[in-house]
Length: 498
Image (cartoon, rainbow, N blue to C red; front, side, top):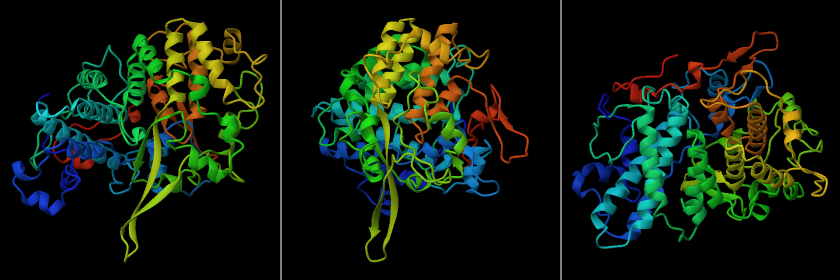
């Protein structure tokens, strides 16, 4: 990629390259002496910073069709801006803003690059395959997530001309660095290269494996990546590595229903939950905001998705429990904030929210969708029946059996509704819509619906007032791409047009 602009992030991000050296000390040293990464343990410490501390779930949830305004004339300004798909780059310091996600994810990528550089110098002395694999996959994931917010949805017909994002392959040692956006095709090629190379060598031997990319979580990432790219065989290949016994590995929402509110929010993002494959700790206020946001689970959305049996093929109630007395606080308890004290005497610290990045429930639905695209409906139905058994109250394995006819009847084709870059026949359309609706419910509050809105080019219509005209995100709408942060624009990077 040729170079167009000079700097992706600011000095504070550069300081985050080395976790165990202070900022002032880091900047006072010449580049070659800033750190001595001379052992496998130090490399492993470095890689812990290769996972972004930013949380994308607020912005993705509010931009998707999972959100609806609850009360007119109130609400957080940034959230209102995101809800209306407007330019949110002015919210530079908000922990859950697009700019915060861009900056912190590129900082994590820089950390991965620093680890990879150190590994290249020590490979002959130590066995560092596992660390190299983790760093490569973390680098691929960071770029993948940035691309999905700031680029168009991948389309092989246009990817060679669609703008990408800077794919950073070396650690930033200078305060001035040149990059350009390249093309989306180049970005996807580099993601795939890092991902496949990492998958071949990544390990599983960690004290806390669910906080690292392992073979299982990396396979779930690969399944999502290839689903968005349209490589169905690889989706099936990698999802089958992550989900080997779905009867025992999927999240049992029927069992969750018996738990208290606190029991739900403790178990959902826990390492004890079998479905969870990768968990991240994020510097985020989402645990405080997700229930009370004015742009979220309204009474209309709750009726459309959860109350009673909407969309359930067996006409039975969903096992998802909506908490809160009114839609002002309707929520699913998936998050728990913990406060990290940085100054005990002053009582100063930062809020953190643990979130699930990959789980087996999303992965098995990705596999079912790939089976549908291969027209292997028997295998898709097998996966979907197991999934539904964990999400339906009073499920009866003898009588509650999903069939092709049930899917087609309940999710009929709506002309020009689902329009991905590939062709769907009528049966595939019904199945894909059904699977997307299952994923929409399962991942509520977690933002994955926004990626389906983009990849299927779904139209979203919403109002900011009861009497006002609807604001419609039409197909191909340029507002589906976030605006480039101002700190990057200041150095010449090309912005996304509106």
